[in-house]
Amino acid sequence: MPENVIKVKSLVKKYGDFTAVNDISFNIKKGEVFAFLGPNGAGKTTTVEMMECLKSLTAGSINILGYDIKKDEIEIKRRIGVLPQDFGVSVFLTVYQNIDYFAQMYPKHVNVDSLIKMLGLEDKRDTLFMYLSGGLKQRVGIAISLVNDPEIIFLDEPTTGLDPKARRDVWNAIKDLKARGKTVVLTTHYMEEAQNLADRVCILHNGQIIAEGTSEDLISRYGGDKMLIIRKCSDKAKNELIKTIPEYTIDGDNVLVKLSGGDDMKIISKAASIIDTGKSTCEELYIKKATLEGVFLNLTGDKLTEGGK
Image (tube, rainbow, N blue to C red; front, top):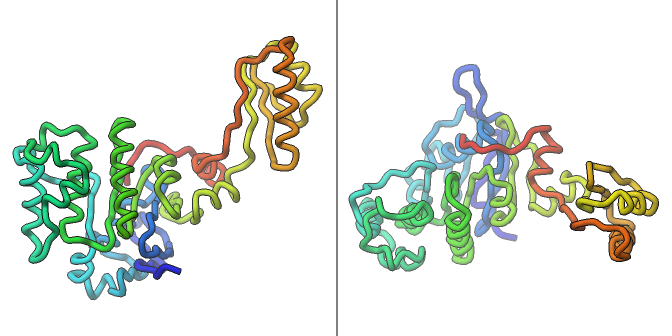
């Protein structure tokens, strides 16, 4: 089993009477992508900033790579890399110049051109930062977080505001970090991002952990049933389906059927055979799987929303 490189116990952060992080505990293993998933105000960024030595703890403990965050802040900072939500660079410097600027802050650092190659930025090496797309800017940010060759990288909402292609480019960069043996701590409010990238997901809500595990495990435990969706059915098709299929719901021209595992294939086959007769028309038949969005909704009654902190 991989060792735990981050150990957090009974962590609390208060601002006056407001509790932003409320008595949470978790461990993060070496070489995994660990995602904090939750909406605006859940406590994701506050939790990560305490691990990054950017905010003090009200109570509890954090141990990173064997170092206590209250006693060994300098040693921890030498061994981690950080990409905050709003990282600061000069828009008037090139990609190379920006990365090199941060590299010179460390007595030992990774070769800048090797980082540029690793993040697929060779063609933009001498391009001013101001002329980069959103996805390329985030890749520069990831490169900067790697200048000290950290063992753990913290990425706070790295794809917020990006278009789908740019988001996928950043995802590929994160997957490459994992392939290189890095431990990645990610915060996101995109359930697809957490589901696609993370080995384990920690769902936060109102400063507390409400669930933790692999995406598959969380969906299996809390995601609810899969649903067979039969869309835009004629009245004749709906009548035939209702006679044949149990546990259905009518939603306008659509027939919705819960799939609970036992007779799923029989139900799907019956529905398909009714539609295939040609006498009973429906436009589409597909299976809607449970997701982390459903997990969050089932556990909290709320939906994941755009946001940050």
